[in-house]
Image (cartoon, rainbow, N blue to C red; front, top):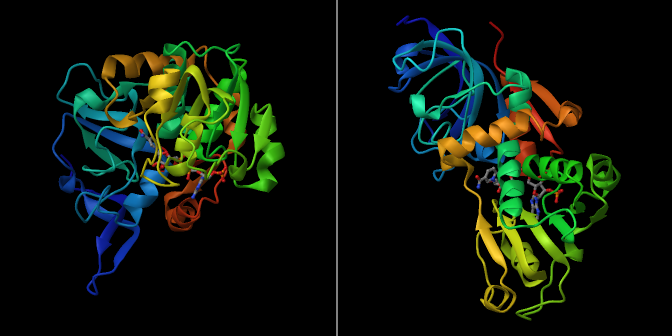
Length: 334
Ligand SMILES: NC(=O)c1ccc[n+]([C@@H]2O[C@H](COP(=O)([O-])OP(=O)(O)OC[C@H]3O[C@@H](n4cnc5c(N)ncnc54)[C@H](OP(=O)(O)O)[C@@H]3O)[C@@H](O)[C@H]2O)c1
């Protein structure tokens, strides 16, 4: 393989022990072992990428590290006959950008198992409008469906609604006819969330219940929770009989302080969402839905594009919870 260096965003420790990230070049031989070499055209920015870019040890397993849990590009070479040179493909989740160098780079090399042929109905660019955030939103909506929460079941609440996962969950649920209550800490984005598909928009305080009551008056048939902590326990305590709450995030806290009463007296289901290791067969089906009946053409309107060289400021903004919608990272065109 060519020893030609490739551009990537590298996170490393400097001589003073400080973690720094920026665009640099590395020889292709520095890429990990794997079946499929992919030339990356697009990646995206997720909360987890910001943790990796700042050297969070829970995400960036070891330094130096290349973040980017999403990548879309074309196959350069593959030892697995399932993939051919020039084939357009995407990779989201697994260990990409976490235990293994990720998509904020001109090239990735990954196991064939991780590689998804570009779903019909999507381009490399529009697939990255979704990226892991959109896929996680889709997994959450799929979980509600699997637990029989339908558009006529009652209100479905989405927390962290202006974030990557939250905004796509609002759009998808709105498109499917659900009565969506979006929860956001950004007062200036309430009207924007209505344009995405929210029937109601409320502040975080309006769902957070600081009392120690194990059960609250029921408000929700379902919930897509992106924040965790006391907001998640408040949702669970206010979910109606046989309702379902999905949990994917922890920006408001990783602890869950509550009783089992919502589960044993109301039959509430708490469903964990793990986009990283979602089984391949289900992954293929869900991407097919995202390119077909669930396709959100208006997603482009809520996505901004940055070059890799601007990643640092976007990382700081997402860590502060300041970004609304999705951020696409342009890596390079063929
Ligand atoms: N399990 C998985 O497979 C999976 C996959 C993707 C993401 N995640 C996790 O899901 C979460 C959301 O990811 P994302 O990429 O959508 O991140 P994001 O774009 O940063 O969105 C998070 C949103 O949460 C809200 N928020 C921020 N700080 C908060 C706080 N202290 N209390 C309450 N709400 C707060 C903000 O929305 P408002 O201002 O509108 O309230 C923010 O925009 C993250 O924790 C991420 O790690 C998990």
